[in-house]
Length: 423
Image 1 (cartoon, rainbow, N blue to C red):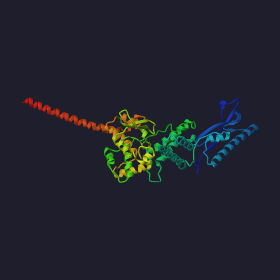
Image 2 (cartoon, one colour):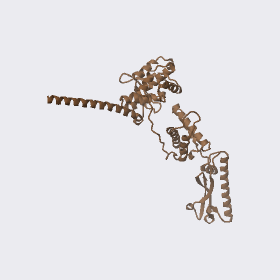
Image 3 (cartoon, rainbow, N blue to C red):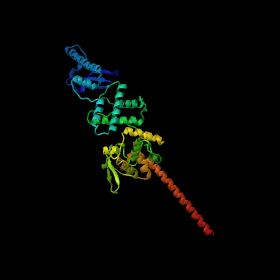
Image 4 (cartoon, rainbow, N blue to C red):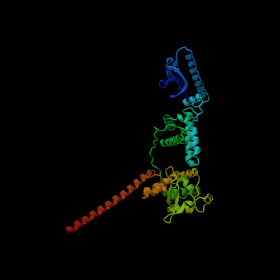
């Protein structure tokens, strides 16, 4: 079922451009509150023009009236053909059809296909997969809410974005997944905005429909493992080898801060000798392309040594044997259950644990942590500042205890002095 279109055609003149009492005639097309005008290359004596109509019964008046009817009939024929073919109906499409202009107009879904094809080699599969997901939701929105297969980029508007926002918030998944939260909705709109920006750069779109729309993310604490939880996983010996192997790879990231993709691609070439004569991991972040250097702590070095003869790792030319991301996260759920950890244990939690429990909570400066994580900005690392506050709180408690001990000692010394003087 196609959404109802409002359509009208009117004729008007431009007196400011008239020559010798003749007024140039323009045709105005209006579709769904959008309108455009173009010259029909005819003029009319001002004495024959009355509020959009040609008056009188002279030969000139009858001929001009007939011509205006033909223009109107042609435009309606183009409109009816677009309607019958279930095409996108815009004022520009009708004007171009009448004027015989073959103008390339890109649609929203064409833009999305173009974006995903252009960046398929530049983006990680996990990131590209998210763009495909956003594209599927936009397709569903077009079909279910707008009753359209596609729209031209010129039809994108603030209203379109706000309606898409509301659609995503009210979307009810048909499987076991939960409805989208605010930040998930914002991520989809953020991806759409990036694709729209590409269209603007390519000059496929004149104005930015996101100009007045503000993405509003809710601040959330990053999950991480406490020292006790980390120790429980480290010390647990599982009967299944796949869980032991997954545990080791996860713990490796807890002590290096590497992401799943970086551990998966880790080769012997990434292990270098630093200025201190110790072994370091040096590489380039998959996501930001920033270079990072991380000293290998004893816990991480022990895991590398444990798997140095692993057939799976050697066959792939890698340092560690890593299962697929899907399998790894599934096995981590089992590990969390067996270790009685009531958290959504995913691989990315290891990176957060490195930033919090392993480094910041043990007094490593936030600037050093930022470098090791390969963050492009210190602001990105400051999402872990809560842990710094906890560490500061612990330090201040110790300081209070120290000051109290000194005060008590000073009081005792004063009392002893008074006693000696009184004697």
